[in-house]
Length: 476
Ligand SMILES: [Zn+2]
Image (cartoon, rainbow, N blue to C red; front, side, top):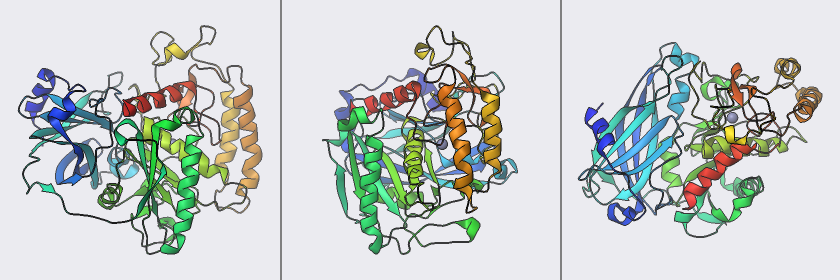
């Protein structure tokens, strides 16, 4: 459904400021679930249910999202005055799925999704817009509205207040009131009653891994982390390619979009019902399984595996969690381009990605992270790309499930690591070609970064600044 009225409202509306929270909102959360259906180049949204949830965990001062990240933009307008009182950028499974062979082949699919905002006192109009990736080459990605509806918070027939799950929760890290902190909720999937001690250890471990990584480390006191003990009937999660199916609370699964290592969650409604037990801004799902894998979508959630199927490779879980959290928390894009992915033209040629760490514009004057580039660093920045590519081609030929996989991979990783460390502009910000799943035409800020190589290397300065911006927006 398209309401052209709302486009007009966008232009005449004013933005909400800090003092407006009390005017427009009460200290609880409105959750709107909807169905998102379509195929490549076509989509529609229809309302599912509106829920009342507990305390609002987000900022009460920064109600309008100035980060300009995400494939979608939620806007909430006060119906009486047309004032924009809340906005939030985010991405979805649906928009990723649109780039898969299945969608390109014309299949239509439906996903359940959620947006949340402070519970309004009076009638609001919510509007969801899409950042259009199907624009002509060279054009700027612009938003177009996909859905709009009005909600009356005082109509009991519109708002679902049914009490939901009662799983136990506890604080892993508590630094103060949710409204001035980044609030992460950790939920487990595939943990039985007997596995719960393992879940608690995992929650503690991954909280520490994150808060010991820069730039999160420097902002430790800005984070609250809570855990919810969710029991599943069976241990482990689905592995469709092995015909392994488990009865778990969240229905998380490997093989998302045909990728063996990509773990996402089929059951959004249950996930949101459970997460809503505590105040939260960001969801982390720990997977009680040992196959390498995880996932992270901007402002949706992060998943990671938590057991290693190969001795000595436990560090990879820590790599995965922080890398995926970078997607989920700050909207960072994948900088790697040599690994197999299920996407086609994830970043259409000629269109500039919105991700803060990817660009198609390698010119010193207009590159989006130009303030990070020293005058002596050439743009684009030379590096030993062909040498790197040939090693990566060898790595790509290895069978990940073969018993000697890690043994064979080790020397290749060592050599690529050497290249990235020894290249002339290593550690400097520039524009290094090869990023966002493509070898040519997209650039990353540094030779290496947690969003580039499979290693415990830190975030480069551009990614770190993008993370800092989100922490600041959450803690105002
Ligand atoms: Zn990634």
